Amino acid sequence: MIDCLQKVLTTRDLDYNNLASLPKDLLSSNKNLGYLYMRRNPFICCLMIEFQEWASNQTQLNYYGKCTDLNNTIDIDSFNTEECIIPVNGGWCPWLDSSCSVTCGDGVIVRTRTCDNPPPSDVGQNCDGSKTETSHCNLGKCPESCRHSKKGSNNKSEDNLDNKSGKKQRKWKAMNQKRRDNIDWKK
Image (cartoon, rainbow, N blue to C red):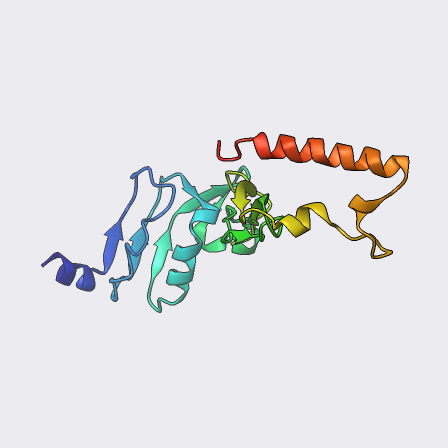
């Protein structure tokens, strides 16, 4: 019954309702509306854009009301909507994962995302949260041949160096390998 009544109403009075904007689709079912009174409401002009678009498609509508924006009060039908800065809050794009930072052993995966789905407007809020996350990855133990016989540029094994610096380097590598083997990486 109410839906039918709204379709035949020719006058609607919204005066003195303390409205800053009109609820979405409030008037969309009114096909015969001729007069709309919206006086004495604290309408915010930039929140009335949808209404102005709807009203511009009505052939017999007369409406009365004022809105305020940037400390100026003006008739709703005179406000230039192009002056509105509509805030758009930023939204996150899906996470993108890097591959593990190593080809064997323990490494790190870095996840990144960007705040451009949509990007925030000048007055919109940035995305909440971090744009990067890290997690550990383990690709299994490295083969023995990879850990102890790395070849140098002259195709000689680094472990087969005959000089004193080579002995120091081998000793340092062995100590570091022992330390790595004793660390519990699964903490």
